[in-house]
Structures are given as structure tokens and as C-alpha cells.
Image (tube, rainbow, N blue to C red):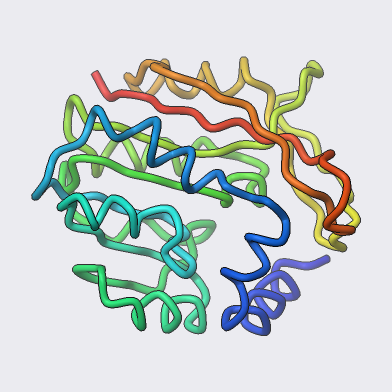
Length: 209
């Protein structure tokens, strides 16, 4: 499926996205909240890359973080805006654009359910380093694979291809961008049939030195 078709799918399902996530038993956003909680404080600024409807950062806003969000779908941004918890929302295609913020603008960055749509994570990790302050937390999810290639493309029963990333590749990017891995948790979610748990993801919590 093309990138434009991916966009169309998200535009079509924005209004029911939260319901769909529950049906897939996809709780990476809640896992991120639990794993990052000890490292964040009220009034700090957090950027949510690929914010969607806000599932990954709404919990953090409830404990006092100031949330800023980026997404390439206007429909997703509208759904997120309706929840009234963000400081600012911007439309941004992270595959084509720099993050639209100045250097060291944020305390923390979160990116949940996004990176498996990107083959090359190099530019995005570099941008996260640029906008995030020293000591900040970068929390994200990947679809891991244990092969020799940095990234592999894989078809899914959703009808949307994804990219799986080798943990050693991710660790290399973290080192290049002066970040250290603090925690990792793997989790399974249901496949397109909403019955079988056979989609593997990793939640990683990293700190910028």
C-alpha cells in the first residue's frame, strides 16, 4: 500500500481510531505512560510525534506535562483537538520535513505506533536529539526483528506494509545521537483478525545524555 493510501486509511478511521485500538488490544500508549512516569515532571514540555488522537500523551497531560503534537492527518489532529488537552497541534509530514521547533525546545519526546511505517530512522532520531534537552526522555515503539538487515519490509494482514527494525540498528542510532536505553518492554497485540496475538512490538525508554 502506498503512503497516500496509508493517509487515506487514517483519514477514514480517525473518528473510530480509539475504538479500533482497544479492539486490537494495543496498549503501547499506556505502557509508555507507566514506563516513563518516573522520569517526567509537571510543567515540562513534551512533543508527541505522530500524535494521532492523543492516546500516547493524554495521560501525561493529566499529570501536568504540556503536550505539543505533530501528525500528517488533519482528521487525526481534529480528533485530538476535540479532547482539549494539548498546548499546540501542527500538521507535519515527518518523512519530508524537519520537526517545526527550535533547538532544545522540549524536555521529552514520545513517538508511539509510528516508526514501523518508516524504513530509515536516521533523520528522525537526529531531529529528536536536536529538539530535546539533555536529560530528556525519548519514548518510542518499534516492530523488532532479529535478522542482519537494519530494516525489513513486511506485509501484514491489515493490508498495510510495515518496516521492522533490528535492535542493534536502533542501539547504534541511539549511540550516535547521545542517548542511552533505560528500559525496554516487548508486547504482543492482535493481528487484523482481532483474535490472534501475533504482532510483536517493543517499547523503549531512552535518555539523552
